[in-house]
Length: 192
Image 1: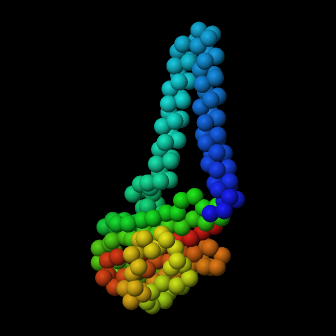
Image 2 (image 1 turned 90 degrees about the vertical axis):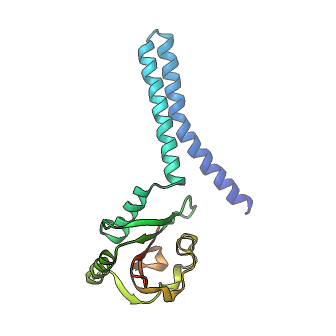
Image 3 (image 1 turned 180 degrees about the horizontal axis):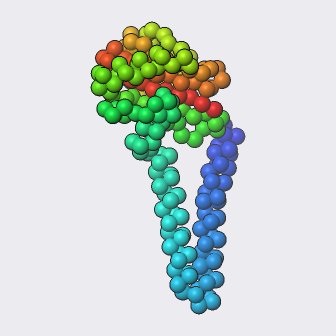
């Protein structure tokens, strides 16, 4: 890693820390001012606001590092355009973190019942915005570490059929692959 990238990362994290800390510092100054003026109750309210703000920041940080199952279900709905079926269970999911280029990547492995697997496949076949192809995925995005982590390097022969949408070269791409086991669906998205 060259010094330019290191400086960029330090600048971004330093700016982010300042943006998070600045409201706390302002609240602390207001709290101190209120205490000096004898407004104990108001100062206590401002102190509570500091605690809530801190907890909110910690929760957001946790969601970025360790996404919740609900965020993966929401991601499924955004990519596929349909809610996660009743039997659907996200067994694995990866999202890209901080990226200086602004690309966002997510990949999910979803287990469905046989009936919902078929229903989803039929629904996507009827959707004219998706391109249908037999077999494995387009090889242009296989280098994605998120895809590799979720699929554990599944061979192309593991896919029965897949649907894709978007333009790979412009980093606006969606992929939904149905495995031959007739219960597993791989859902992938990259966007800028």
